[in-house]
Length: 553
Image (cartoon, rainbow, N blue to C red; front, side, top):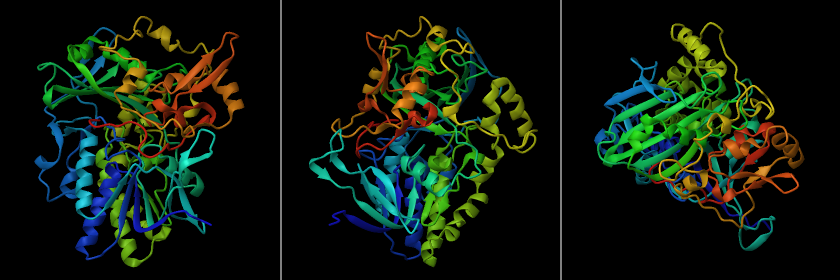
C-alpha cells in the first residue's frame, strides 16, 4: 500500500532565496488584487530562511521601486549606501587604484547588504501575504505525469549509510502543483535533473561558473568606513589563465565582508580558491584593513557566469525556473540579486496569466519568455552576452574583445562566443604548462588562524552540520573511472578546489591512493558537481536542515 503523504497546491516554489521569495511575494500580491484565492507553498532546504543564502553583496536598489513600491528604501534591511568605490590592480607587494571604473562596475548609490538578512525580511512579507513557507525540507526529485512536471518529492529520512531504513524512517512527501517554480540557486540539484530530462539546454552554450569564498570580519574602528567598496584585480591570480578578483565591503558596526571569486575554467588541477583567498589576505592592502580584527562567519558558493547564451529554456509544461538556477546573473556587473528578483516577478506575472486562464501548458508559460524579452533584465544580459567568454584566453585578450563589444552592443567582432565546460578545462597533473599551486605560493600557505585560516577552521565559522547517519550525499558516479582519471591523471583536484576540505586524497604506506569524503564539512557550494573531471561526482541534497547556518552572509 502506498503510504506517501501527498499535498496539493496551486503554485509550488522550491527555494527560499531572493528569486523564490520575489516570486512568492509578487504572485501573492497580484492574486489578492484580482480577488483570486490560490495556495502558494514555498519549500526551503535550509534550517531557516537565509541559512543557505550567500552573496557579496552589493545590490542595485532600483528593482525595489517596482518590486515593493509601497516600502520606503529606508525600511529595507540594507547595510550601507556605497559612497566610496574603487577598483585596484594588485601586484605581490603593491597596488594601484585604477583611474576609472571598468564598464558596468560603478557602485555609487548601490547598497551593501547581508542577503541572509534580506531574505529573512522578504520571507516575513511573503507570509503576511498568505504564502506558506516550510523550511528544513530537502527536495530530491521532480515528479512527472504523462511526461509533464506535476510537482516534487522531498527526501526520505531515517536511512542509514547503507540505505537501510531505520526505526525513525520517514518517507518523503509528495507536493503536487499546477505550477512548479524552481528557485534553487546555482546548480540546483533538481533543476539540473529537469534540464537534462526535458532537454531545456538544447542549443545553449555550456553554463560556466565561478567559485566565491567569503569571510565576514569585525575590525577596529577606523580600519574601513561603512559604504566603502573595493574590488581588486591581479594578484594572486595569473592574468593569462585565471579569471576573477577580490572584493572588500565596509559595513556598519565596524564589520567588513571580503572574499575572492575565481572562474572555474582554470587549468591547473592543483589550484585552490580557498587557499588563494588566504594568500590574497596577506597582501598589505587587505591585511591592513583586517589588522586587529577577528572572523565572524565563513561561506562559499558558486555563481553562474555563462550569461545570456548559457541560459536554458526556463519554462515548460507546469514549470518555470528563476534566479541563479536559470542563469540570471551579469558577470560584467558582478551582480545577480536584482536580476533574481526581476526574474521572480516575471515568472509570477506569467503564472497569474496561466492560472486565470486555467492553462499551465508550455505554450501558456512561454509568456515568461516574452516578458523577459521586454524587460530590463534582458537588456542587461543581452548587452553583456559575450562578456565572460571573452576572457577564456586571458585578461589582456579578453579586455580587447570586451572593448569591441562595448561599441557593438555586445556582439564584438566574432559574434557569438562559445564556452567550454568547466569539468573539461584541466590539464593533466604532469603537464609542464603550469607551476603547481603550492610552488607558486611557497611560504604563504602556513595559516596562522588569526589572519589566515585552513579550510576546517573556516568551516567551523560556517556552522555547517550534517546528520552523519545518512547516506553520503556526494556520489562517485564511476569509482573505477574516478581512480584512473581524477586521481591518477589529475591528482584528485577535488581536494584542492573544495573550499571545505570535504575531499581528501589518502595515500597509504604502500603508496596506494584513495579518495576519502568528509561530507559533514560540506557548505553546499556544489563546486564538485561542476568541476570534477569526467562528471566524477554528483552533489545530491542531504537531509533538510543540514549544511551551513549562515546568519550574516
